[in-house]
Image 1 (cartoon, rainbow, N blue to C red):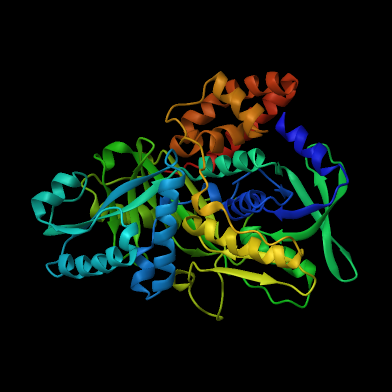
Image 2: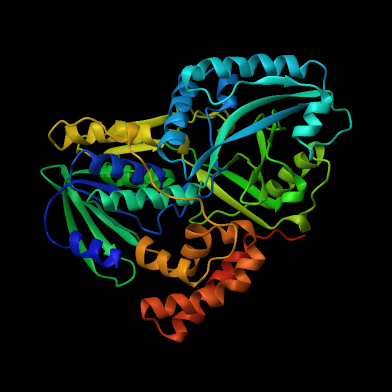
Amino acid sequence: MQRDLSIQALQSGERWDVLIVGGGATGLGAAVDSAARGYRTALVEQGDFAHATSSRSTKLIHGGVRYLRQGNISLVREALLERARLLRNAPGLVNTLPFVIPAYARWEPLYYGLGLKVYDALAGRHGIGGSRRLSRDETLETLPGAAPEGLCGGVLYHDAQFDDARLAIALMRKLIALGGAPLNYARVIRLEKANNSVTGVRLRDEESGHEWVVNSRVVVNATGVLADDLRVEDDRRRPRLLAPSQGAHVVLDRDFLPGSHALMIPRTADGRVLFAIPWQGRTLLGTTDTPMPRPPRTPKPLPEEIAFLLDHARRYLRRAPEPGDVLSAFAGLRPLIQRAPGNSTASLSRDHFLEISRSGLVTITGGKWTTYRKMAEDSINAAARVGELPERPCATATLPIEGQAAAQSLPGEEEVRRAVTEEMARTVEDVLSRRSRALLLDARASAAYAPQVARWMAEILGKDPRWSEQQAGGFQTLSADYLPIS
């Protein structure tokens, strides 16, 4: 199996050109960029690929209408370019999505309409459909789930959506195809140094407990919300950089938002925008922005976050959702850059941050899924300089990323076998949360199905019945965190 091959490669004692620490969007993107340039590339992740933030997003590839309102024109322009590239390079995973902003005040159609014309203009030749104002009847026709009381019109515009975890797995598979060695459930114990320079890491296989040293010309810290931990280990005098924020989401039945259009709520109580989007046969509602000074290993939505989302949904949806309607609720952590003390997380930029330490550790953090490719390009440009690697141009602007979004149904035996043998799934959670999206689509149904998946996995992996029972029980305990108390 591929995981065994990656372990063999990482234990070979050979020196790698680039070693990426972190298996989310940023790390996987950087590893693909590095391998596509012909550098010998390895990637290690302490959990599963995309276990954290990168599988818990709002499933949007977008320029960021809110960032336009903040005046961050450069970020919007960059994200719109990257949106176009993703639509072209990963058509099986990314698709266009029409949005409607419903207007409940006479001034709103003109105000939002003008702003979205600027959004269109910034996209330029990379635009995917122009915005336009809608009458009240047109708004209800395109957005039949919208609350009709007081509605006076709307604005239509276009962005894109995707399956985040499946895109991450597609990047992992692309890395393998390019000759790289990805390894999940491999924890970095410490940085290795010689003459005050980072020379690699000491690694522990979380399954076997075996430890060994992996040497590399350059190490890239792409650990997202945990990036400060490696930065501070590298240099304890370095101030912390991140101000983590939690974004929660709830998943409802498709009946709450029938049709093919998404709904954008332009202003919430905390100054954010809120989305209700059709996704995988469900309605996905998100997101919140809750500061998390001490981020948990596995975040879960707070009761007040779920209440916030449902309260806003009741104001804009024809059918008012209640806690008992929630099929699943999940949360992710954003690695926001705290450039000035005291700023609210809602006001912090999604720009990315690149740093090269005195010992040569390259850190890339911040940003968002839409701009992962540009973050990867910047980080590998820096890594090549630090590692004194041959200068080679970035190839990912046109590099195809093959893959398909997960099926809406629970995975069958062959899908589970493929997840284990080809996609390095090691636990029931890996299969039901990221190789398929069953946990996010219906937490109760996935919990009931977990014992069957565990039995199939035990057979494939050569595990005993006790392993199967532990895996199923652990997943069922985990799934309870995805259901609010009604």
